[in-house]
Amino acid sequence: MNLIFLGPPGAGKGTQAKKLVDLLGIPQISTGDILREKKREDSPLGHKVREIMSEGKLVPDEIVIEIVKERLGKPDCGKGFILDGFPRTIPQAEALEKILAEMRKQLDAVVYIDVPDEELIRRISGRRVCEECGEEYHIIFKPPRVEGVCDKCGGKLIQREDDKEEVVKKRIEVYNESTAPLVDFYEKKGLLKKINGVASMENVFESIKTSLGV
Ligand code: ADP
Ligand code: ADP
Ligand code: ZN
Image (tube, rainbow, N blue to C red; front, side, top):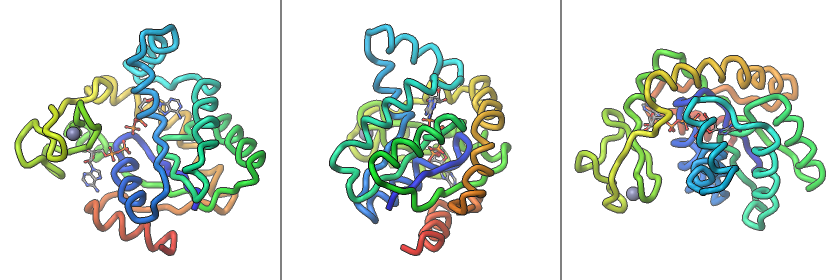
């Protein structure tokens, strides 16, 4: 299945995408994760990406489109993929259509996880990630067994720099301005599956599976 996970920052895209990866055995392609890798590089691109992300802005379309194009060409995408955090603008969505057409592929569905702003802030402010393996936690909703320590690898849990309050507000603003129009874009194409994201992680996953018929 070829899927997109759409929704505001903190809606639960990453959490739900990972559950679906385990179920369907198709890869999750998170542009956020790929860009966080890139920003570690000591190169002009690395520095540029670091600056943009720390301000909560979007990385330019050309850069992200190129990354996704390359990633979708890898053999593990043959059985399908879950795009998590891409597309985030109309030009990105249009570029994706072109890329998929060239590969003779089609989207099966766009899973839109709907969560109101107040809840997003609660989720993002409690989000912690493992510095070593990237596993995600929430201090209240998905706490690790030992505070500050990853259950999986023992790594240290940290708060993402762009999860600090001022940057989160900016990211939500950017979402409403640049990304929210994609809901309509995919609705018109008959691809949108709107999911109520205000429920437990398990119940949201049940709704997603039902909507996809898996
Ligand atoms: P979240 O899952 O909380 O929405 P992500 O990890 O998806 O956050 O994204 C973090 C940051 O990476 C964004 O604020 C943005 O700067 C950059 N980014 C990720 N995906 C894209 C994209 N498709 N286009 C432009 N910038 C992106
Ligand atoms: P996104 O990828 O959309 O930015 P995440 O999947 O990273 O969102 O979730 C943001 C934070 O909220 C994480 O700390 C995660 O553990 C937590 N979370 C995700 N889904 C739920 C849920 N249904 N209820 C409560 N907390 C959740
Ligand atoms: Zn870890």
